[in-house]
Amino acid sequence: MALAKPFRRVLIGLAALIFAATALLLAAWLYIDLAFDSPNEAGTAHIVLIAPGSGVWQIAEALYEAGAVDDPNIFAAGVWQSGTTGALKAGEYEFPAGTTPRQAMEIILSGKSVQHRLTVPEGLTSAQIGRLLADAEALGGEVGAIPPEGTLLPETYFYRRGDSRAQLLARMQAGMVELIAELWPRRAPDLPFETPEEALVLASIVEKETAVAVERRKVAGVFVNRLRRSMRLQSDPTVIFAVTGGDGPLARPLSKADLALDNPYNTYRHKGLPPASIAHPGRESLAAVLDPEATDALYFVADGNGGHVFAATLKEHNKNVARWRRLQKERAATEP
Image (cartoon, rainbow, N blue to C red):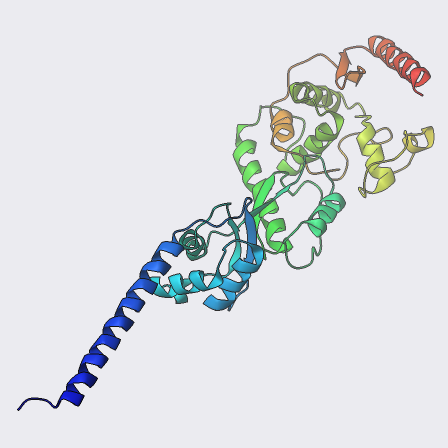
């Protein structure tokens, strides 16, 4: 039986409505798909922190407010369209200039958050490293107790926001343990010290005595010669450590009273190595004391150009010292 005309018109209208809705949904789907691959208009990169527990709309708003996407709705709809709404990871992410919403989604899905870096220079003391850690951006937790001098490896360390200061300290300690395990078995024979700890003590002195890489093995050779002859090391950095306790550099020249200070770290008064390291030495200084240069030198003094001049006799050394003092006076006379 034929349908009544009014009912047919309803069906036709309903079909037309369904067709129009389907066409509209398809157009919206295609628009979202197209817009999801359209780069943003930002001319610079943006770093955005995605907090733990953030939903897709919260993430979309965070990206929009930072300028990483131009339309939060497109980002959210595109993520929904891709079926990855539950896989977005919290973290700190960098979005380059011209990032598309799809690329932004892929960056967050990867979980590869921004890496921060902390460079720990060779020759810092525990107190100085503690301050460096306390000021480090994005690290969490307190610094706590700093390990003793000589037990942390100066290096550039990479970390992510939220990593703890304690974790980074543990990595520094592990780095030094690994370095000693690598270098100690390869040490030269007949060195005037018997343990890795003693090697670290001498390495810390070498580290503080010279910043010139090509000099390290020769400076180490001088100290090895003096130890073998039971001569005092007479190292200024050990006296500075005795005066400051390792809190930081001494903001004045050493005095006669400093050199006479009765302190176990004062190698002008006490023979042999100090009781412990005076700083945290780097790889090259430790390698230098474990394979020192064969030299007849027993003395060295600054040459005025950042390095040192070496001498085998006290007479020759005194001449070098006199030359250095004249140079100091000449420079002081020309300073404004």
